Length: 384
Image 1: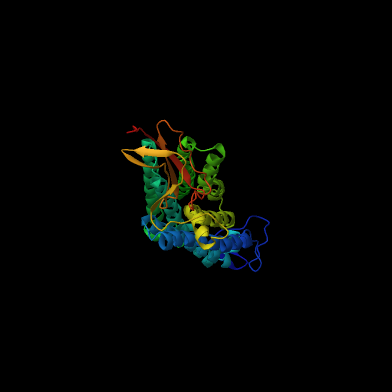
Image 2: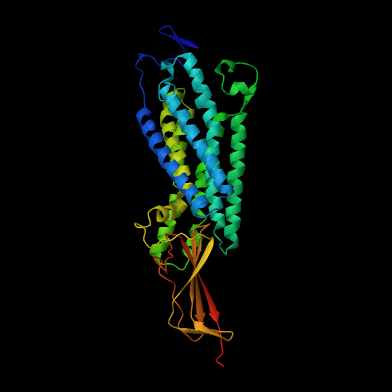
């Protein structure tokens, strides 16, 4: 403890610095308020539309919806704590301009609580995205193995980090009480833990981006549509950018004694990432939502009320199979649970194949930006 102008502080000011407790220097305060305020609103809307589609349109809430709800609650909580820290002048301010008792609040909120809570939305939102990947019924065995392995890595690392954040010291109170800094006990290397946490976040974000790329490339789609799908998946992993920025800021912050000042930009980027996590995990149903609430603006889009619908389209070729005569049929299937569209082509031997339907409209059903998989069946028949 040090004395500055009769006020006890935890960190002494540098030589020549004029301390001003009434009007201290601040950084990233207004930016954090704006990002957190707008971001929480947008993220909450994305989560709402996902639940609207899954519950109201599909009547099919699942385990990953519960995980997303918990992740959203964690995201809101972490940003509320950050806003509170800025409001109480214990974040984005020089440590030597914070009275000692206020600095103790920073140790509790900024040094302990936020590190515990932030693990929840980062881990669960990534698991939600990976569970979505798992529902994509790819014929490739490696794809299913890759998704399952990354789910395990994300969940296991998240649990390990959460446990380490909860109990970094013995006694546990030593984790946040700076008055116990010299008391008997021990703490893990928290600097290394924070760096490992941020590094694992970057690695898992890259894995989430890479997993669907081979599957999308192998689809029988035009280059333009494949690029569009890759963009959709890339948006789902947009947090890789924020993870890298946060890692760079965190590395420089942990070696600086003035952590309350350097924590300002870190907290600002945490607000960005916390909202992006929810948005990315909820984005895959956004077109279904707008097709339902704004049908005039999204003409041709339909949201089937059952999990799988098959709509036959008219054809010009006569099809006879197994003694049954009739027109050739082209079936367009939508898997609403995974937002995948599967196009099945029945190709009668000796007749021109039926081409895949356009990706915009097919008898009231649309692809709506989903993934298209083309399956072809060859039918042999004999005239009697």
